[in-house]
Image (tube, rainbow, N blue to C red; front, side, top):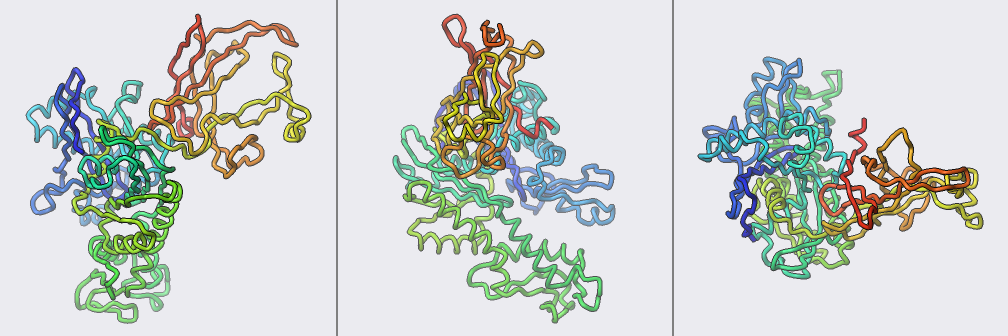
Length: 574
């Protein structure tokens, strides 16, 4: 259902939602006024889309042309219209760079999107210029694939700083928010009532967001309708099987068919060079791929003049012909992966799912829809692909999430914990195996290092405000007041992993929590080796949000005190 809750903030605010897609991207926004229900709008004015070039379109291609010295020359729709200039000036085309996660590349495109958004808002609203100039009152919500976590969010945050969206400080960090594409799609579908028949308490639905780079698959259970509240029914999935992988398989096929790599011209098609291949792939992307259906006996890629031919390679009248089985081979690996993932989601949700909702740009493929419809019928599932589901679903859904988050709890994807030292118990076999590692602490207690202390178990349903923590003690080191603790995730199959050295490759450092412990009381103790000081504290983690948060807690004067802790992901530390 649409937003109904008025904004209660004291000052006017602008919130911008960004769908940074692998192949296409879009921006939505909401201007928040005190005591008014927010309205979510989309940016529909982009350079290069003027005149008859899809004015009002809500998405632009995620592509950038760079000059030889690395300067940005053309972006988005403007880049699509600059191919002749690119050839003349020898510009280099960057595409699918979202998957490479290089902050500088991401920043160039984010900066362009932000500029387009500011221009649109300034022209579309009387107060627009003042809104976009008041940067401290602008918040951003970035959508990302289900499979991304803290390290990828850190990369996107760095890109946002480089792009000038936010400053590189605590205030800037608080103005940037993240949401998975699966959750953004859920919020959009609920707000636009695309799954109204299924939004009833106890009902479960699978959302398949098929995009350019990834296919995000999430399952939710509706727990109440007044207000609407949902929980994740099982761990969300993310497949690297979006529409770009259809293109990649098609390009590999054409390279082999035309012998593009062959240096002997007598053994390759006369159209078997990179320039013709680029034109073929452009035509495949814009016409051949989106029109392919189960009933299509043959498909054509029209890439040159009608008088051109190379019949040995299936090229007549400037067209290369692909038979049905060849076209299907480009799609089928992605479809099989989606089917397997849906099956896994249904099993994880207890075997009962009432609807599968297919959304996203790749969902526009008639072949994909038909194959998944056949699979769903075979499995006793109901598949819906809303015709009104536009390209702006993720960008708008990101804002619906930010303004009225309906997901009350999420499922932990892994076991999360930390390395710990366990008191030595000689008669336990796993302790005896590690007797050579036993050490003694300041109190004189023998300890076995390398244990795994689970803070949050895999599969646990975590509410947004639920806290998880572990109590630690450390001997105070005068050289530093800082506390540093690694959060480790276990990716193996064991239900109760106890020792890191049992499966060292299955344990991965997720992040490091750092905090200033100067305020934590130091307790004087006397141990086997004399007096020492110890600090007792609790590491508090909030996993139920779309971003991991941490705090340091300790007992003092009969109560609990807290201080903020910084979450540093592996990529941040490099």
